[in-house]
Image (cartoon, rainbow, N blue to C red; front, side, top):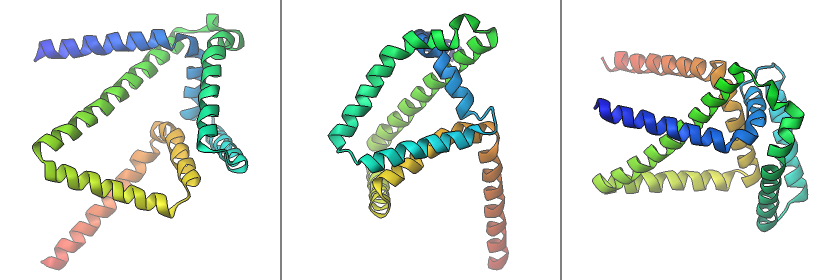
Length: 203
């Protein structure tokens, strides 16, 4: 068991080091973005929502076709991949990196690797469910897809995408400031109260 844990830890450290090396040119931008999504200043949430709203309003106004939208998105990514590693050190000054910044960059890369492992783990569990309990797998997948299709039919695609993107951008800050934990705790307490009231009525 200990040997397996050591292998997992070594693999995780190796993957994190590889990712750090791959993202080294983006280090300054990633740290700046991390400060924004974790709301290190009180006006950052408003700036995030404002920028996201402006972007989606521009997309709504231009109303590009799917092919045009995908082409523009890939073109912007290619330009960013070429320009950011070149311009970022001049803008931010990579020689000013502190030990704290380097540690935070390491933590971010580690979190990205963990997220990748979690997604892979969920994917494996889904296929394990398919092999072990095919009926449950079929019902779960079909009912989930039907619900998603119904939501997509009720809400405009662009607006739904805007809500999802906004939530994902705000999620790290919500976690950082304990807002999700707070409201989840409140919801659990309310559910427990309702269950106790139901039990009393049944008695």
